[in-house]
Length: 250
Length: 157
Image (tube, rainbow over all chains, first blue to last red):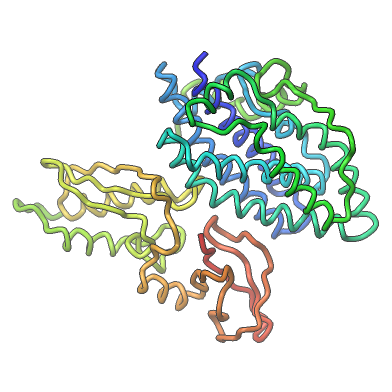
């Protein structure tokens, strides 16, 4: 297993799976502006996927491209964290998931801009501008809804309680991470936790929400050992066309 | 189609490309948008370096097609489009002509402060943001409290 390929799949699968999840809101959001905002966010994430998985395919050198990786791998080959494959729930839970992810995504991209691999640094430099914008919006929305009405506050607290056990996986470190950190290609994920906690503590305080005490973490996505049952259903829908009509173009 | 034996000059080629409208915001040209970073002859092939705006912008592939079409129409047969993502595209690369065209078209040009200066319709300064996103990845929705009209703002990135 090539650590660089594994790492690039982790980055690209996070953006791909979250991008697909967020795109499920298209035409269903509570108001038109939010519909457009979510569709734009999904579009950014899918565009970023093309860069990450494109480079993964290049590094792998097995004749696959970004589309082949996205559309013809099965669940056990996906390397996204469990957080991004969870179903959307209500609008509040979707925005809470987005905020928890964006706060991490923004931090990791800031580190990757200094990667010793120029190709990774270039992708991080480009995508970090889009992600800073995602974070601004998801943070403002979480604060607005958390510190909103009794109903919106209760829904946001329920969303945080449900999703927080999936945050810890973002900071897991394994042999892949150790090899990349050693080479200066990517940061050790564990080193981002303090900065992340400071951010999330600030946001949730402003949102009048309480972060759960327990640091229990569901794991198994970023190493592909045990995805949730939700990923397979997502892939069934996302990959249907390329599975039914391999190589179709239009 | 023009057929010519001599190689066109770089200013001629830039002028042709400045005639190609952005597919999503036709008020400005691809040159105004700042996505065409370099032109270079490699033997008989013209290499055009293009930096995409947003990673997921659906206009990117159309932009590449429009560049090829404009060059072929003017007699440049061998065109190679090279994608370059570093340095990343920024709204600082919008030309002054492009900024003026955006404003005339009803889109407030990007400002470093992160929001529009004036309403593109009435010039009012009492403005509010409706949404951080708009009809294309590069725009946000704003409203003028003076004339009460909504308008597009070209996001600063």
